[in-house]
Image (tube, rainbow, N blue to C red; front, side):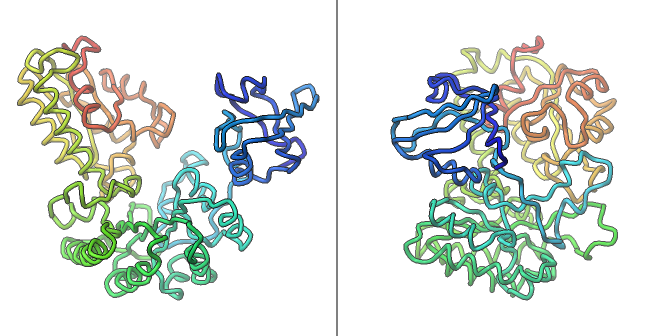
Length: 452
């Protein structure tokens, strides 16, 4: 916090702050006479039922505002800086870091490595704990901030130091001991980025054995394969996982899932979707994902999409969409995806066109030439690859793309190619859709652009 306090970016209409005439451009100076260090302090202080806010208006006038509200009722304030403090950059040099594998010349913000526990609490980011001080742990315990998402990689202290290229990385694991002490009530989720020949095999078994002992505080652990781009010159030599490797990883995870389900009634350890594709094994049923607690880490995304789609299609077949039977929908559209989910999108499109025979859907697989063919997720596709590989292809009246190809809240992709650029280059309307099953159906059969 500087001497100006914390700049207010937005006030929610009808909120407590709005009623008190707090506005964008004001500065919050203190709550109950206490300065606010960051978002941790703010989130904790505003829970009280009685508050006194000190606010400075743009003309320098200071207002002291007394508030009575329900416990935990939000004030409706959004700050210019989401953390209300400087972002903490990563102090590690991890052998698997994807940012180190990015090409030069991209937006500067894409090269920023965050490792901030506050983002773990607010946005679900995973942190290594190497940036956290004892004071940070004290504040988490005091404010009861939960859950905290921890990127473990391994519980072998020496190996962790090597993987993170940080001599304090092994010692940082002791912070988990404090967070998981009896009575803290702090919940954690874990992640292991698996590197072939480094932290897999016996090391993975050791890590999962150690992590299992952090139950019940540690709610889940995801195991994801390292992502390898083509920009690895001078970096630690890592190899991609093959079919037999993936089968062995899934076997190890299945062991812990069976043990956890018997003892706790959940599966605890989860394999990200890529493992099943590499192993050429079926995607597990929904009940294996424990309410999809690790969804943002690529765990269960395929299963959730398939189940949502099947349910939405059954409803559409029975009731139509917007009251119109599927049999009346006609048109020709296209969609594109990364290699990982391409076979599943093809199957979904096949089922839909069987129910709507007047609809033609072209599904295009996009190879990630920008980062390299080993990067197969749709969320890392670039506009230039989409344009280059779809020129001259059958696209129909519209090209449907999932919203995860775009940067959050923006209309451009990773390489700064905008949606309008794709439309101009391909001569087709681009429609961005959400990732749900019904969103997929509506995106393909919508009446917009004269498709019906």
